[in-house]
Structures are given as C-alpha cells and as structure tokens.
Image (cartoon, rainbow, N blue to C red; front, top):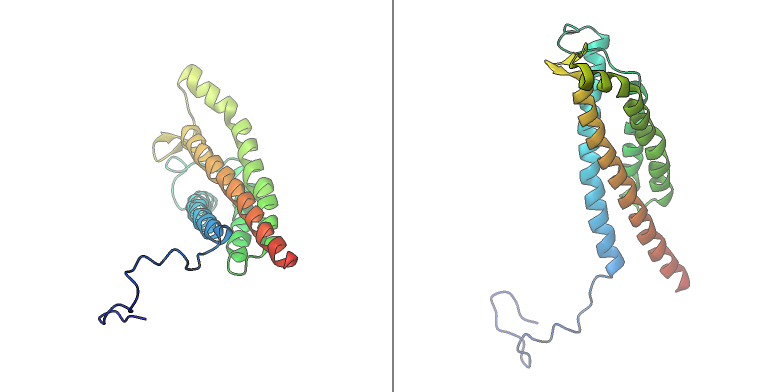
Amino acid sequence: MASRAGPRASGTDGSDFQHREKVASHYQMSVALKSEIRKLNIVHVLIWVLMAAQVIVSQLSLVSHKVVCSPYQWEYPYLLSIIPTVFSFSAFPRNNISYLVISMISGGLFCISPLIYGSMEMFPVAHQLYRHGKSYRFIFGFAAVTVMYLVIIIAVQVHVWQIYYSKKLLDQWFTSTQDKKKK
C-alpha cells in the first residue's frame, strides 16, 4: 500500500478501485434523509420560537397591543408542535423507529391540525381585509392576518416535507432491518 508521499504500490496504475467496497445505498439514503429532516426541524424551531415569542410578549404585555396583537386561538395548540421535533431529533442517533413514528403521528396532530384550524379561524378576518381593506389587529404595522397566513403557508410546507421525508426514512430503516433479519 502506498503512503501519501511514498511510491505507488507495485503492479497497479491506480485504476483498480472498481472492486473496493461501497456504502450500501440505503445507508446513503438514510444519511441524506436525516440531513433534510434536520434542516426542516431547524426551520420549524425558528417558526416555533417566533410564535412563542409573540404569545409570550402578548400575554405578558411587554409591548403595546398596537405593536404586537394578541394571539389567535390556534397559536396556543401550535406551541405543542415542538413535541414532534424533539422526537424526531431523538430518533436520529440510534435510528429509533418508534420515536420516528411518534414524531410523524404527532406531527399531524400537533402541527398540521392547528394550522388547518388557524386558516379556518382567520378566514373571516382575511375576507374582511380583502373586501373592505380594514384590519384591527397588527404585528409591527402589518395586518396580523396577512402575517399569520404567510406563517401558515411556510409552516404547512415545512411540516408536510417533514412527514414525507420521515416516511421515506422509515421505509429505509425498515428495509435495512429486514435485510439484517434475513441474514
């Protein structure tokens, strides 16, 4: 075997790498999916922190309600959406299938459901803003319903991709465990 600075091994020209072992595709896919889910989890944590900040600032009356309005009802159950992210992060180090399943199920319950309810709760306010151009709740001078609908649009995409990638990762983990059981 040649060292980094030493001569090449005798009898080879460097083109004999085809026979070497390669990482199995399901391990490569698992690493790629974990990376994507981590990125989505980080985005979700940022959204969650912004929501929690709005709720805390409003509840503790740290600033005027003219600057940051009181939260809508759907924002309180959405604060529970940190639970699936914690389970998701906990599932990665040891490829824990049960934690990933809990993360997926609670993602639908604590993430997607409050967002659907929130879009229905805010629809009359959005309709009034669209029809009459009047808004009575503001976040830093912007109509609160507009800001919150933007948050909902981003959050729904993040959570749907989290669940989709988690399902694909779960399939990869099942494939690798089934392969191990066969051997």
